[in-house]
Length: 373
Ligand SMILES: *Cc1c(COP(=O)(O)O)cnc(C)c1O
Image 1 (cartoon, rainbow, N blue to C red):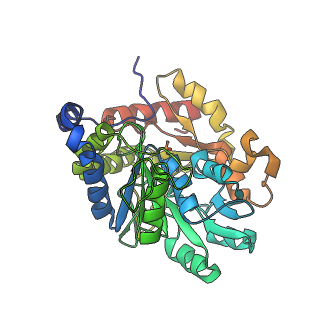
Image 2: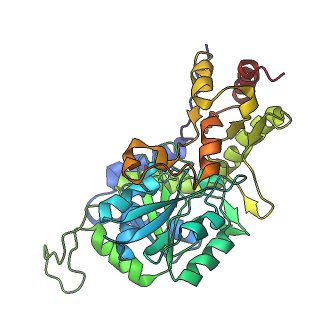
């Protein structure tokens, strides 16, 4: 029986060569070479002035919040539908998450919903480029400017995506990517913080490295208690190889979505990822929303597909529904779209080694289990 994984990277001889070279030689005087190169090339590729390589995207969001001076008493708006890592760092700094609803089509944060939950304690918005799609960045930036608050773009799932021709990861005061093994570009585990602001860059570099003094040459002279958030040379070397192949990685994502689209787009009870005319979507996860009239939820469908060797994942649960955020109570009434779509959303297998045959096998089984043909 086939066993089609949900996600995974695309590794070639180039990655093996770069990592071998880094593990053999990325020490002594060359210890910083790979992280520095990776930072320079990522910043250039995305179109940002500064980049800071990190052990994860979660740590990137943590540093971005600290770099903006966000702390106890402050509120930050996050979308209901995202991986918890978008919001978890708010707890690390003592800030409060405010959950906003998503847009019914893009599944990204809704600007109208943000307007409803805005308070004068809100210091930032963390929009998420969900499943490779983009929120209405122009409206978001205008709203943030109007309220004089910051934007941290969580582009973890969207390397290569664009809004109005501008790269995902180039919006707001800071933006972050994840290079976990299930993301489009991987360093094993890893992340990066990008910004055009020199003050943010300096502050976040300082916090990344245990708050060491940045002036004078006194060693081991820490000015603040901070963090150890460095990316390894080996991870950075893997990232460099992947970045040189990023066009190919993005094209594969687009192909995977096309293969699903070929078989599923004409089925009226299914809704696939949306791509607005001014957006280039890199479809991190090909996803379907089932029509409720089919009488099957994601939690019922996923185990059935698993018995056929097809590994799917549930669309994220609304954050305000999770036990982790029980203290804030359900926001089902305030954020109806998130609560309406989530029970019926299923991520289809989207590993970068998927073939067209695999995708069609998934579709045939999905159609069969749902009885839609
Ligand atoms: C994966 C992901 C993160 C966290 O990335 P890590 O590198 O695992 O810390 C954050 N936000 C979103 C939207 C993600 O998908």
